Image (cartoon, rainbow, N blue to C red; front, side):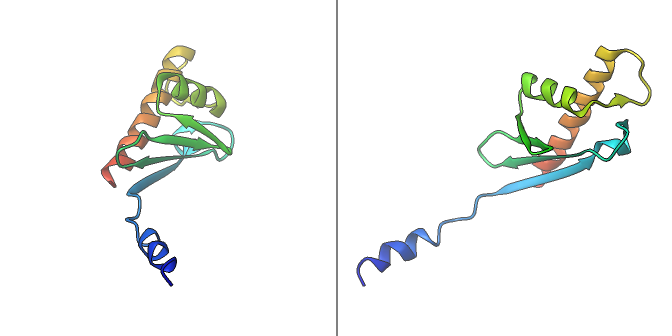
Length: 102
């Protein structure tokens, strides 16, 4: 019975405050198919982007790798570098919406 008391206290820990947003990138980009990106932010920790079973950190390298993995083009841009910057901006906006949920 004494062993059950600590178990009861550990089972009642506060839930982690996490907020997520999801976006079909094909709604705003030319991706050719539905490409859902999810970003989840946990209070006190960095946000994480998820696409196609892979997690991408909220860093310059992570966003760049995610933009490349999406293989989309921005509908109003012809320059690759400019397109990639606009895609990264869109991903950051998605993250900001997830943070508002926290």
